Length: 316
Image (cartoon, rainbow, N blue to C red; front, top):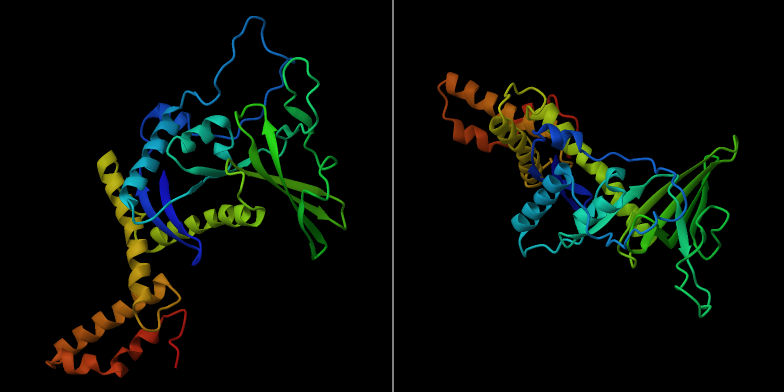
């Protein structure tokens, strides 16, 4: 389990906390998108009302909540964090309560076949309980008022809708963004339901924040390819935790170091390692020749050897 800090402007990910899922019950309770079960209408006779905000968290959700609280404590008052972004595994009420109990808003994804209902906007009949649900939210019940964008690119028509909707398993209204893609040649249609409990979040911002999740994949790519995350042989819990956190720490440290070095502004890990390897070879060659290293190392031409093996050539 890894939590990262996502920078909106630079679209960069910075790993914060990594924990191993050790206990069997934690691994088994790792969230998966569960298909909604069809049940009979109504509730069992004699059942009492329940507060859907009071949910029992699974061992995985408890560990995840602990990691979120630890990350908030680590960040402190220097940054004001607002949103927690997770994939569709938290697209349920228990996942929402796991996050909102820490004081953050959740941005996640619902199943494509989730049953959502538009809020009832009619007048109260004066009898019984006020009506809560209107018609079911489908592509047919969505109106032009819900449409936020409509674009066609390479025979793919993409429409984005936004609506506030009820889900019977959630205690409060959800801010739902529906992305519909139609293939104009084949006629096939696909849709995605993104949601947040922040009702004021615009659709384009919600989509952008959710898309930032992919930046975390680059952290693991660099940690595995350059900092040994895929190669270490430790098996004990503490050793595994230490090495995993160290590998991801080196990803963040390398990016900060790369940003301060001339000609490495693209953040390439390979270019950074190539540069330091060239410097080390140059020093050793000079030492083997009995030369004093510092006067030579000041000369920028010595580091032209670093250009060998780099991906991005140094700007002239």
